[in-house]
Image (tube, rainbow, N blue to C red; front, side):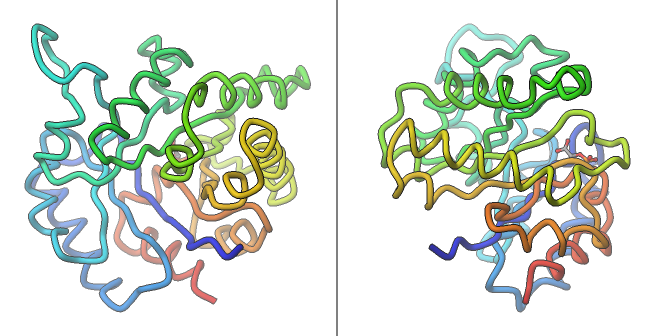
Length: 253
Ligand code: PGA
């Protein structure tokens, strides 16, 4: 099955509203004709609404970087799926390794967040992946199995088909060390096999799997040409117009 590539920029804790608008304005101009790649930008909460006004009606989707699973109420400091929709989001990144590492996110909280996102029609970009110690201890497949099976527990086939999964080896994030295309493909194929075991082939074949970790214009072609890699979740290179656009162009055949 042909899956449409999806390139998402995870801006992390960067960019004022003004800087965010400059960045997305520059991207928008250069990708106006791109139809064969889904393009997503993920600013900080405070810039979502303004960036959303600029992306509205364009070929650029808007993503938040996190959400809380409750809809409303006494949860100081949190933001719900409804409010993300209200700000113009279509996507939300869930379970990024930085959230798992610094903010105590677990498979259980990731699972609740995915449920909340789906209930509001947001597309979850669910992150999974091993750290360096786990990779060196040959635990990669155990960790990825744990993340995938437990974070994605209890969803129907239809719900599964609405998600994007990002495989991000933590040792490759922001380090300049990319997994080789073969290393990445091996884990992507493993994730697809797990999805097949959890559901069926139609689920496994329709879900888009992004690779993330030091993706740049000069390595995207080799990654995207792998059978089971359908796009990228981009950190550092997503903060500049030229490198982000270069990655998008690298997905066009
Ligand atoms: P990086 O980050 O591209 O800077 O390695 C990727 C990510 O954390 O999503």
